[in-house]
Length: 161
Length: 246
View 1 (cartoon, rainbow over the protein chains, first blue to last red):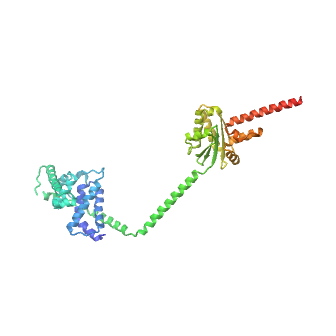
View 2: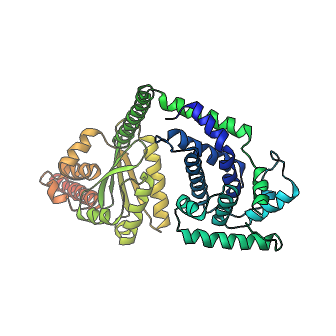
View 3: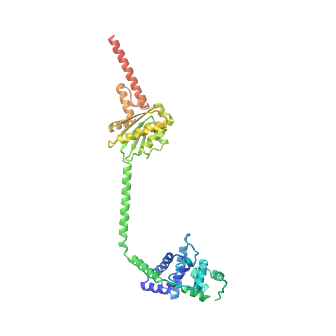
């Protein structure tokens, strides 16, 4: 079992990333809080050591994605929602960022993950494929389709790298 | 575009309150998991064991209470049968004295019925087979273990009267209590107490009559034969005296 110090360090280093995964999947704050805490509970109980800081982050992101998926398996949970459904009082979000986040939330679950992991975390399609246990080609397809949908939602703006 | 997405997601971060709540929950979980198990286990086992014993005893107590015999009701219409009653006035056992009763018991599900429902079922079935109209008499004896037979007799009288009336039968009810010895003696001969007492009355005027000879007669028939024997005997003795005087 990991020490309290290790957990504090992981929370500081990767808490925001885990929170963002929860943000793109979960509408309710209570659900988000449950998943967030569950991810770090798994972390504290994880016996094996991580090769690097990046390895640790990738592990936490994968656990967070899986926890969100498990929670969303419930028939009664609404999988698609908008920014209006989320309490944003803790954040200062400029107008332009609101527009981008709103567009991301309109995408299907799997596309939200690849957009965040690729554009924000900077993972390649190969790395994402390992993380979400899908084929590389599938990730390329998802990225292409997600980009196209975002372009459409944001009024035809380009998404060149 | 990458920059726009980056700056949009940069606005989302783990709130301090969320981090604090997470640390608190993790600390609590850790405390729970380091608690020696023997502090919790015995307590939970004791509670479970106590619950189990309580459930077991209450089950046994209820079972014993339900199957404790408090009264015996013998009904004679011909069919002739005996009900064993518990303190809830439910039939816990039924015994047939003759083949007519055996047939009726196999048709009616009398066990565990309330006494009034069981009596009503027997009266209705007897009315349907014609036995009630043929005899026109329902004889019921009660033997209560605690001597408290008044309530039972009220139930029986009301039920028989109402049930016979529903079945358009003009029925006379003969209801009385018997003691334990009479009932045991009747049971030894496998007849109802009421029939046993009727046979004894007949044997008093005609000592050669045996119980086996009377077994298949209804109480009405036995009483009628006793009456006829009395009448003819008085008539004969009257004639004899008359002739003697002559």
